[in-house]
Image (cartoon, rainbow, N blue to C red; front, top):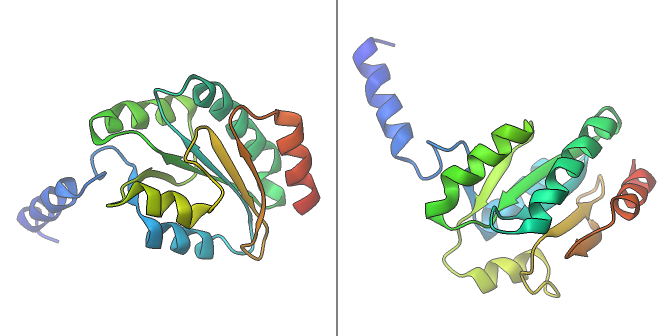
Length: 159
């Protein structure tokens, strides 16, 4: 690739929403695709936001859980529920924690439809954790402040 072509391609990538922050925008269809792509692994999906104090406490613990059980098939997926103007803060927070897994940011035309597509019983309250088994079926959920021991026990049963 010639230098000029590279610079044009790099500029186009930077124009994509989320490209500069490293967070991938996800909507309802994208969420279904990421769950499908995770089949064969136990997925721990964390919905969080920088303005949510319990989220900021839980996320480092979830990163440690993933490190502990990654070799057994656990994959942590983070989905920021921050507004577009908070995206850089969300990305910075994930970098500080050294979150290794895929990092997403919710970008849906209809928040209620997105929330219902994840779980019809979920109000959208944060933090929210959803656990999926290796076949992609939801195996558990925790909304609000969760107890690390309970989450870890649920994960271990699936690993």
